[in-house]
Image 1 (cartoon, rainbow, N blue to C red):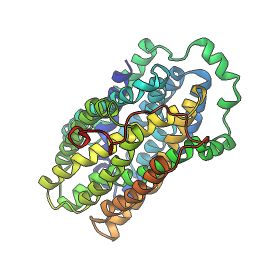
Image 2 (cartoon, one colour; image 1 turned 30 degrees about the vertical axis):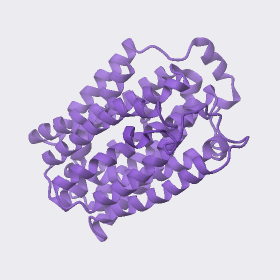
Image 3 (cartoon, helix red, strand yellow; image 1 turned 60 degrees about the horizontal axis):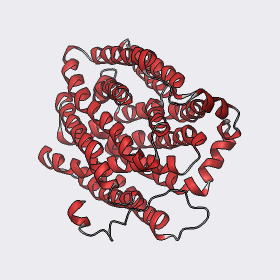
Image 4 (cartoon, one colour; image 1 turned 90 degrees about the vertical axis):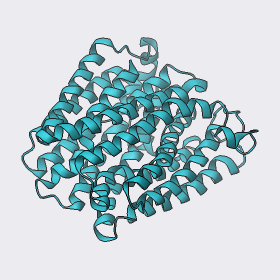
Length: 408
């Protein structure tokens, strides 16, 4: 059921994602203004995600999912009726305020899995995410022939179907006893101080810092890809949609099949370090890709590194906190992602506008190079101590597994 929910949610989202630069340009938006659309969405989600996460710890995942999906429907309707650039900005702000759907789905999965099976289960959620990206961009590209407002209304209809399905068929993952206990726990209270303390807890701080840096680099790629493809390679909206469909296929393969296989053989933290290195090199190569053929080659390691990092960081965070703090820590993790999205879309648009099409990839690769060093130093090189996360992860390192290069 959760797989279907995430798939439908991402189908609606990805249906309009590659169209936004073209839609905004019909109202006279500059490259920087197009980038700021992502910034507005991210800033709104930055404010809302920790609240949604904390409230889901106290009152359950299902009520907050209904609230979030309902807001998503409204945001798509506003986008469809947009007759000026400011209405597009309002739509993206509403989507951010009511956002948090995927973080809530991850919290739901955490509630119903143990630590051993969590990463593969989260990988399946990532596969649903990717499957939505396979169908959504292609559908959006096709529907855009009839006007840019058509994909927005179709996305609203898809989200409405998702809302009805959750109301009718999705059970609550937390028992009534658990919800009563969590409502009275001081650890589920919401305050800025509580969020600040979580950011500095030894068990979580390293993982959250890596999450923030990864998000900065990957959002440079993700939020500016359509604009980069249009500016550097001269791709049409339909071609860009088909390229994103290819990325979705890669994401499904990585998260639906590769994660379970890799986590059964290697330590999750070793895989995190390997993924940061992979992403550092592949983002640089993306930035300087000269044609569509080379782009298709480069996108494979981008999808591999990004898919592994996103899932494994989430898995490690849920294992590093108490059960009553899962929603809150995932909400905080989402806020860090959206903090990166405040900076990266506008920065990417400015880099494309003033430095050149190579700049977002090279800058993203440089950030990931720093992240790779930080991940190795914080997760592998430092000696275990009492403040380390209580993660029971006994699989061998990549370096010590016989035949590891063959399997990886």
